[in-house]
Each structure stands twice: as structure tokens, then as C-alpha cells.
Image 1: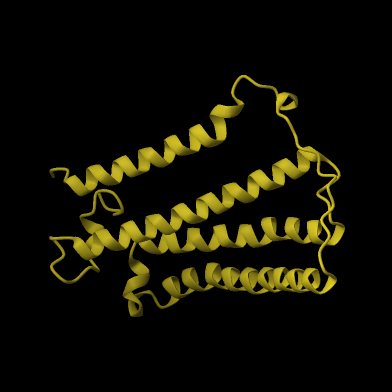
Image 2: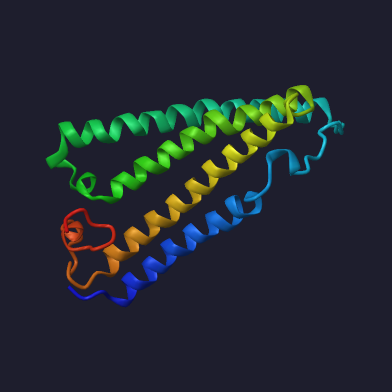
Amino acid sequence: MAVSIADNFTYLYFLSLLLMVIFTNIMPYLGQERADIEIIPNTKEVELEEELMMGVVINQFMIIIIGGLGNLLTLVAIPYVKVVYGSEFSLLQLNSMVLILHLSFADLLYCLLGFPHFIQIYFTRTGPVNDNLCYSLGMLRNLVAYVDFNTIAMISCCVARMNLCRECKGGFLNHDEHDMIFGGKR
């Protein structure tokens, strides 16, 4: 099977993601010890109105609860429905459902790891006592957000490839059988 131009662009997109991860997250710290990285002290206290701060904290708690429960429900419901009622829901048989589960897992991690750090900053008005912990939490939160955004991009690429496929001719439920990039059957 010949490789199309769309396949080449998809491979280039994957390569650019990999290079972006390397150059933005790994390259700046190669050859440096962790102690050599300049850390900005977190001693500046910001004065905010008490009502505004309470509104932000309540909003963050609601996002943690609703986002955590919603994503957890998605992570449980999709595999359950696929196993128990698989033949009735043909869309669940597509390989793009794995990307939906991946997105839900990344969102759940962000709700559980990212937002508590924000809430702690609003309550104490400073970051964690240990600067390395603050750096690690921020790096982890940003990495999860990076994974989240790229999963959304991958879902859109997968759906676009299914919709633009010349071999499917209107019915995209058998697309995974012949797609060389997103398909599971090779």
C-alpha cells in the first residue's frame, strides 16, 4: 500500500510534537544540575479582595468535583458499554475511542494534580514551602495540559482522516481496517 501525502503530513506532525517536547522540556536542562537553575523566590504576597478569592476557590473546588467525577465516569462507562453492549454502539468499536479515554484520563489527572496546587496558593497566598516541590508540581501540571491539548489534536486528526478517506465511501465504521496511522489492523 502506497503512503499518501496525508500520511506523510501526519508523520511530520508526530515528529514535530516529539521535537517540541525535547526542545522545550529536556534540552534547557541537559548538562545542568538542578541547583544551577535559577528559582524565583515566592515571597511576594498578592493582595486580593476576600470575596474574589472565595469565589475563585469555590470555582476551583467545583471544577475538581465535577471534572473529576465526570472524567472518572467516562473512564468507567465507555469500556463497560463497549464490553457489555458493544454490537449496539458501533462508534465504540473505532480506535478513536482510545483517544477519548486518553483525553478523559489526562483531564482527570489535571483535576487531581493541577487544581489542588492552585487552591493551596489561594489559601496560603504563597506557593509550597519547598521550591523544588513547587517547580515539580508546576512541571507536572503543564505536562498533563500538554498531553491534553495534543490528545485533542490527535482526535481531530483521526476524525478528519475518517471523514476524508476515499476508501470508506461514506461509511466510516470500517475505516480502522485500512488506516495505516490510526487503524489497529495492519
